Image (cartoon, rainbow, N blue to C red; front, top):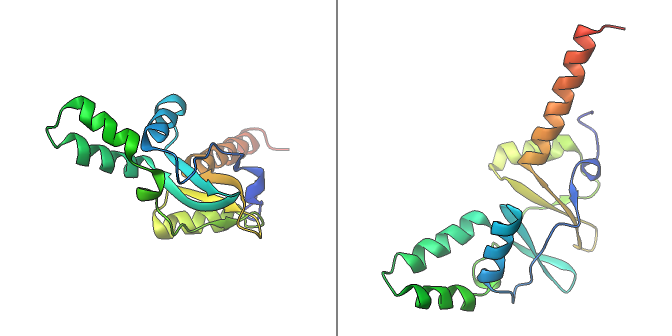
Length: 151
């Protein structure tokens, strides 16, 4: 694996998405069922934003710290729309960017995920710090093998 490797080779293609008009209850179900920490928000085929597990937790703290009845809090979760919680201005990668570019953006901005879009801002994938850790693990294993078993 090289620093110039296109992120297309390591990104998650066709990530699970939500619409701006979906509820935060639907987001909660995805987080719980799939274990994701970032869900791209797509509107009419184009990236509209990103909802993170941190966004969800902030909402949960707000409504559940209210000492209201649990049923009322659940209703609020069902009534809150993704568009009211999501981050709208999201830094994205182009499908032509490299692993090195992703690493530099993650390091500089302390992000944990970056949507990958095409020239029309259509979502083509997502890359996370976990994806990069898998790449680094592979590089380390390959390096260790070459040191232990020289040609």
